[in-house]
Length: 417
Ligand SMILES: Cc1cc2nc3c(=O)[nH]c(=O)nc-3n(C[C@H](O)[C@H](O)[C@H](O)COP(=O)(O)OP(=O)(O)OC[C@H]3O[C@@H](n4cnc5c(N)ncnc54)[C@H](O)[C@@H]3O)c2cc1C
Image (tube, rainbow, N blue to C red):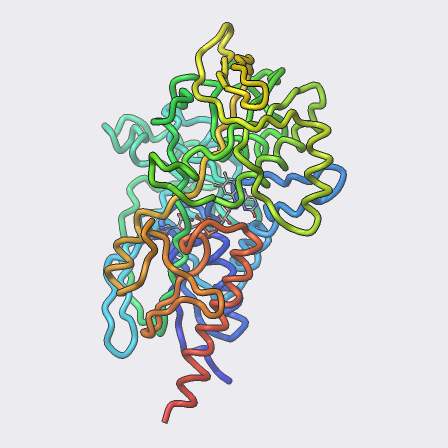
């Protein structure tokens, strides 16, 4: 069947959006993926492969693979730095896009990184994607050219002449037969928790540890770049927290943090790791064996520290109560990792209203496992925008969603009287 005249717009270029796009292109649809940030791949593209002596199925490589596949398909148009300005519905959806300027021309840029090295204002964002995707983007907020016109160093030093600081915003409009919302999650900002995040330089989040391991392969103290002697992981920061009314479990953090802890131990066996938790939430047929091995390498402490204080040499003192011995302890760590949870994307409320969707009391969309959520008008939701889930679950849901779109646009409409 020729579906090539049907178009589907996907909002969000993370693994949910990219996988849905790839699947839809296999049903011969034309697909537009709208990504608001300069880089595709969402949160998952920032994650390190956590294989030790064997693959631990963390899913990080899946995101990269989906990105490469989507970028190579001519039926998929990938729009970065773009967002929906307006969508109206008559017979189909009429989509208006606002595209912020790509100051670095992706067809000319070779990702050499000279702009990144030479920028005096730290205004070049460096992404994580590989393959044929751009790795650098200019941050207008930091760039001196946009402040006072005082610098054009990146443009003059670019050997490919790929940088045009005068590039302007553009708009684009097209019609679409269905809309897929794949807008993902927002990581919890732990600044208000008593752990000194953004006050103590050696307190970082699990997302920042992912990025560190992806870029440098090893754990380092941000204060001096040295290997930490002792690391603490604190789980459930911003999840399962009645005070915040975040009652849900973010589901992926225990597994992901344990995999990172074991990766660090395998690469830097001299580092001691303590893991503070409420209870370990992770599932899967291989998890028990994995967890038993982890317990041999990591000190597991069933308690959540109440507070963190600065100690000598940018180290940190964690205070916790051990209910089994009824004693308080104050161990010192060189690096503290806060395992922050997944929150609903604040953009969800705008889309909920725009498309008449249902959301749960926390702001995630309600996805019914038997079929992709649809408002019956060609709007579908997929991935972590529906609630915390792993990359593997996201991929499965994206495949189901693509099937649901095909079913609604082709099978149902052919069967219509
Ligand atoms: C710290 C941490 C570690 C994790 N580690 C693992 C792991 O090891 N293994 C695993 O399986 N899972 C892990 N996860 C879960 C994993 O991140 C998710 O499963 C995955 O990111 C979900 O993909 P997504 O595409 O639904 O959402 P996202 O990755 O959030 O992507 C959504 C995309 O949509 C874009 N977007 C949002 N709003 C708009 C808008 N209005 N217009 C246009 N674009 C928009 C965003 O910029 C983003 O690119 C981890 C999660 C966290 C928080």
